[in-house]
Length: 202
Image 1 (cartoon, one colour):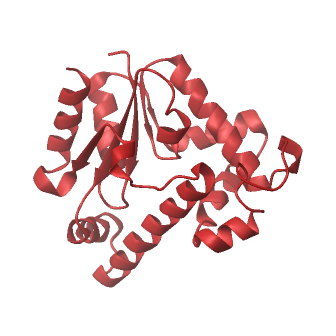
Image 2 (spheres, rainbow, N blue to C red):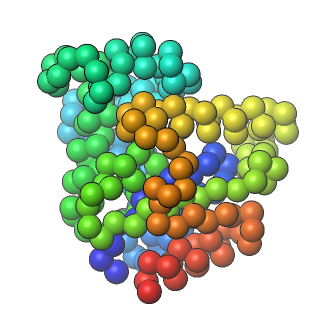
């Protein structure tokens, strides 16, 4: 298996677990938070800065204004003129390209599908599920109330969408950007893993 797999996912859909299990079954590296650690080490930025950059993306319009407009569409050109958040995104993008060059792996989130969109032998997966399933999963995993879980699901989906939309100038969760979309509440996490595995090993 010589492919790189990117997994984008709705909050609470189990996309991270799907990615982890898939990587284990295929015997290839799995990258999620490890990308932040490596990007921080190579760029000199603190790990907390990478986490904060994603957390700021709560409102796409305000986020774009606060960050100095879309780094790839307007204002100044050149690395020195970019906002800290854009520099952090570029540092993270560089690491994603590096791990993809190193060989087959599974990369979860962090706009990896967009960053690697022109690279051959990369398969892009989107993992999603119905709202009730995601609320129920968040309740069980994090021990929070149903009301709080519903709040978290919507908040994190919005954050991911705004972060992605800002940095890529494309729309998050647009299904034609992916090679395969898998609905985890249809038959469960393990079935989702098997479906993806069958798809990429054909």
